[in-house]
Image 1 (cartoon, rainbow, N blue to C red):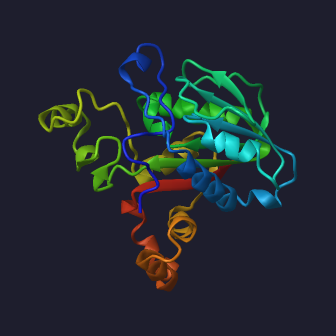
Image 2: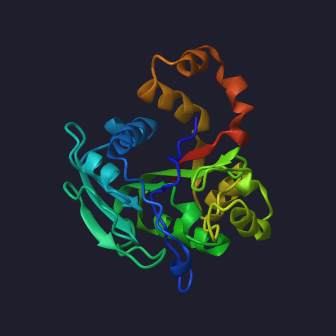
Length: 257
């Protein structure tokens, strides 16, 4: 089950010249943001961390996740959120900051928790993706924790444009394929492979844990607990599911300095 909502993503960002070519893909489905917030909360085990939690959401989109944590009835979260396009549908419970590129307007070591949820595929090329992670590391406290989700390049159907095998093609072929299929003009996303994502995290100085299997189980338990898929996942050993990690539609990681 993909963790990536169809066609609309959390965040789009680019350095000089790149932002104009990249379109916003904000998720505007607020109920889905509540489910996503709950999943992030459990995957990072935030209830066990000392509070209050200073939290940053990079790429706030509709504002639903920032609002979820900023108004949480049990967790005490002091939330900041950034984006390059203001697509917010809800503004209460957090502070919003407009940004122009991957640079974050915060001091070193500010945040206990940093969320980059379907963001890195929108920031630009590999250099921009590296800068995105370096900035997150800079603003994270030494004992902080982060959450990273990115669409898997080897997903069957590309979620932004609903086109099968779009991200499988070599980079130079993706925009022509998109145009031939009449689904868009420019392919403006950079989904990652599992090994590539882990290389980026290591290169930026992070320790990480792959949460793909945990996240897949939790997604079904939260959103479709009575479904056939949830029942099958309960009966399937982790060892079997780990063989599928490379093709799970969304790659999800917990990371720390």
